[in-house]
Length: 353
Image 1 (tube, rainbow, N blue to C red):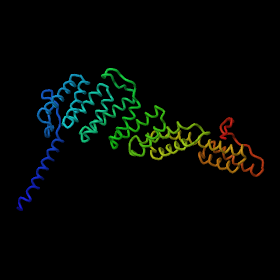
Image 2 (cartoon, rainbow, N blue to C red; image 1 turned 45 degrees about the vertical axis):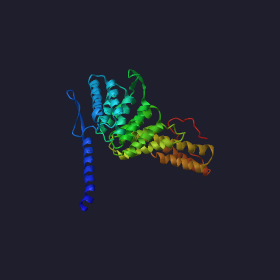
Image 3 (cartoon, rainbow, N blue to C red; image 1 turned 90 degrees about the vertical axis):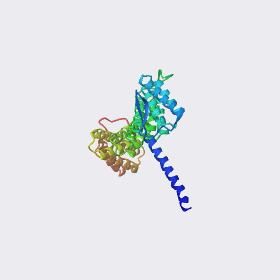
Image 4 (cartoon, rainbow, N blue to C red; image 1 turned 180 degrees about the vertical axis):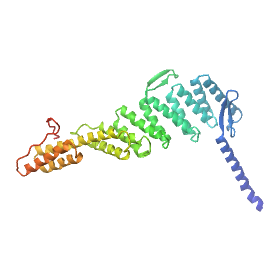
């Protein structure tokens, strides 16, 4: 009685271990193609399909590969897709979907190819071709962003350019492989694409994700510089809101601090000087308004000092110091000393209010 009470669990454990080994062997099996033998399975168990189903799945795989070898790429892709549709649990299915994606990619049916590659990752996440698939998806997204046209109507006629779809594909790649080398590349392409469409806030968002999620990437210095330059494109001048001016200054300064040896330092220095000039000029306009139009000497002092702080070594700062002398003289009822106008020529003053 004591022996029989112990034996069944042991037997069940052996059976479970055997099933586990079978599963591992199946996972390690490789599909190998040869023109003489067709598709064969090496290094693991059989496909899991037996009898007529197994033979039919293998027959479809061989037909698809024969079409592929003969250059009938679209026919090959469709036949590979039939393998997956009819026998989704077969060991052939992941390879069939991958080869379908390759066939449609070669035939320039980019949408269908990307979908097949994505279905491999969704349905067979342990595929050994993960890195290859991410690379092919990146190739598709890059081609579409560059203006490639997807074929439609039986794969015969080129369609319209699909650059906006490309941005969506890059986001999918980022989601599929956030820790791969393709992730920062995808974000930089997303930023560049949005800039082409004049979607500046979306471009800034992509670049911001880039510097926050991938600070060690080789592309991060370019992202900082582009963030500064992209914010510059939003600056309307000293008479308007200066949020983008300040943001540009921050990114240019961060770039110069974090990457002092970068060859683009002169570019950042010029961008920084230009933005500091705009910010200082903005403060000057506010100060002049309160000084000349409102006789508000307290407010004028504040803004002239802010103009000096914004860019201490600039010509604008020198003029601001002279204006401060005028403010103090007028506030004390003394003669107002002359001051140098901003710039070489006296410009028509633009009042904010």
